[in-house]
Length: 452
Image 1 (cartoon, one colour):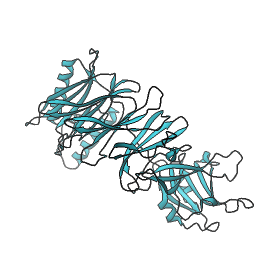
Image 2 (cartoon, rainbow, N blue to C red):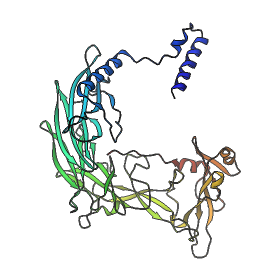
Image 3 (cartoon, rainbow, N blue to C red):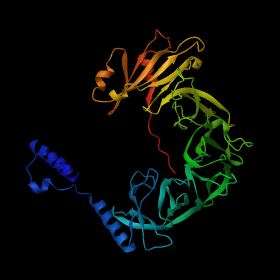
């Protein structure tokens, strides 16, 4: 890798010379890029702090902020005036973890500002949000004590030091959201009842009188194994909600929380069963998302299709996407077919009679780099046979371009590893789509990141 880097640097230098630049000594062509002085000074300050503490760099396990050195704009002025560095002091038994903040002075030199000590074996995650509403961001740190057990702390920085706004133990996850829409973020902490009595809950922390206070709690669904995802989004009636997806023993459920006069409330949870029954699902890798980009989060509800040939054929499903309002009522807003095997999905037109549709995979040519999903029109289930009217192909291999140009095929999408194309037979069924309509409704599946 280093040799390739040097070659690239050398090639760039030669290109400059050929463009009329003055030749330099050969040794200069192999010199590594020089960091600006302020960053060299920062590294020197970090090295001095590590030597003083006897520290080593620490790992951050989850989230979007996992670098051991992070440059930050904490005061919201558009300039990265703060560097956060994450360390571990092996000799410190009680609180070996360190978060060191360095700030630039008037001369653009980084100076040690504050050092926070925390317990545990690593740092689970960090976040930076405005929790107090003053325009500056606070630091949120999850200290990992052991697998599944963490301490969550939040700090703000005034004057020359740090103020701890909250400190609580938790065993699932947390999220930040401005649920009351007052211009500052709140913390929602997810707790699983370790006693097994079903008292799983979401704890709502709001900033009051200089601290983050536990102001209310809302019940999570019973049967919780893990909180796998949480995100804020609008409900179908325009109110802001928090969508929390839980893994259960036999599937998943999305609890939907809003804020009312009494505090945090789970609007989808059925009190009698202890579950959000209308937002539970199995048999799909899909999860709650804004599938149609209207700002409202939709929840998947898969429905199995009757197979065209029941002998040894894997079950296929359509996904009915549900929107929820602030009273917990749900309604279907769209239907998709997701091919997680091939990495795409198709949004079905509203006018299709789903009772006349079925789907099957055809991987007979997978050895040649061609896999496909076939949509059948089957209006007479008793006496008629299903007929192919739409096939979507995933083509790989060195000949994929040629295969995509076979008669009747239209390219839908391509990336560095595959070409996706379709063939449509309107003679079998005039489904209301042409090739352009299929391409418009075809989308690649993108990976969704979730924080813990």
